[in-house]
Amino acid sequence: MEKIAQFKDRLAEAMDNVTVTELAARLNISKQSVSAYLTGVRKPKQLLLSEIAKVLGVDAHWLAGYNVSRLLKEPAPSAGVRVPVYGKVAAGIPIEAIENVEDYEEISPEMASRGKYIALTIHGQSMEPRMNEGDVVIVRLQEDVESGDTAIVMVNGGDSTCKKIKKTPEGVMLISTNPAFEPMFYSNAQITDLPVRILGKVVELRAKY
Image (cartoon, rainbow, N blue to C red; front, side, top):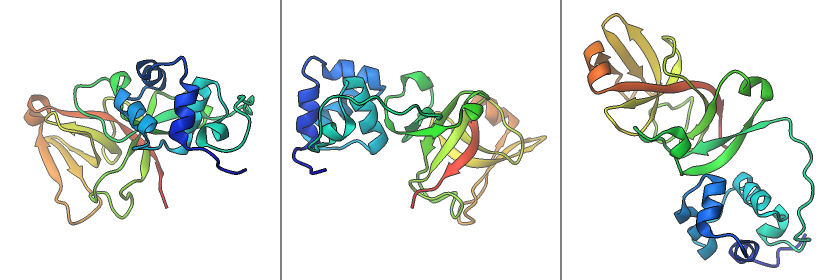
């Protein structure tokens, strides 16, 4: 295949009868992201590009700019279940309302049957060397975890953070795997008042190389 066009131009052509607002809503991403794709400021990752092509009813390779037919080919059936990858999750925003979908990951139907899942991109160095900047974790959404589990936690209305959980009768400790970061302890009163809220349990790490 030969690349003969730019993604932004093919996207504009494919969106002939679809508005920015409509496409953003169907993809569960922000209107700003769609606009950035149309102007060429940003390009989507491969899985999101494939999703855009599916929504618009065009071939993904054509949308990427290659010299293939625009006609959408029937995809081979996939055994996996796709979950959205978020760059961050802010406190107080329902998962269904989050717009910053960066990509998609697949999980097995068996895993999907055990709960509701999202994926999050790791930011920062606090969980090194096990988890590094840009790695993706698969998270099963649940309001509590066992002591020793790694979880996604929100503290005092801030963005979500990934930490190992250690429970005590007096409260909970959030532990980084990087020894350069001190553990953070919150009393039972602080857990209620701040609050300290568990969003879900990390069940899988997908490292990026």
